[in-house]
Length: 355
Ligand code: COI
Image (tube, rainbow, N blue to C red; front, side, top):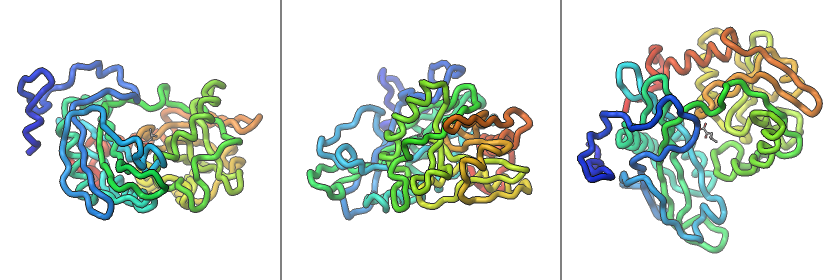
């Protein structure tokens, strides 16, 4: 049962534990922050294990100016969603995959991580405590953002003496309004420290702000997002700012292989499985820009973007256009994925977890 703190509401009245919906415009959701009621916090000191977390009111956190996360970027994050089904249940999609990826990132950045069980339990508690913020079916999802960060103070370069695992959430709508992307291939910057042996394969907080310069310039020129090339050769596609990329050519599906510099997306992995089940050949390997430019269809996958069609890719002076719309493979795959996530299609793989 949720802790008693959940019975208190801002105005002092008894909470109904979220049986009703929050009073917001559910029609107008975008991928932006709406503050909810509670967040989950769990701390541990270096060398120890995470033990007991708790739900507290959503709000600012106090942090040392010398914290590892602020000074040296010792932090990773995750993203997953809670879905409300037509028959009133709330489902998570493969949350243990996020827990495992967080552990992988924590190992890379010398941090302790919550166990898979602790992670999934904390996510469930966060969803239950913020149940009234889970959008009605078809209106959006509750996006959960687990953070793991060095919050202890240290001046020199060394793993933080204390760590905080925190989950906050926000109801969200579409990441990309309009739903069809015009990508620019970035030919100056690379994605993060994404070369071999870097951090491109984990969800390090340091992988994200370095994309701002490229994406700001691309957006000013009318593009929706940028697509990064590998830093080793500058010839092969890696991923866009917040999602993995797929290329469809003569009915075969290609996506860059997970080689340490590409984020192993949960949506990426699920789309590969769905496509294979449908009888498609999915090939994970290096894909050159030239190959992509001559593809029939291109699409992006990610928790935030789900499955989004790419209408065009521009590389230097060349622009390639691709098939979009209802008849595309990406729409077919998206329909199945979202169907499973929202409980409309039978979940034969036990991917969903009821909260
Ligand atoms: C997600 O899809 O969950 C992400 O983490 C992308 C984020 C950078 C918005």
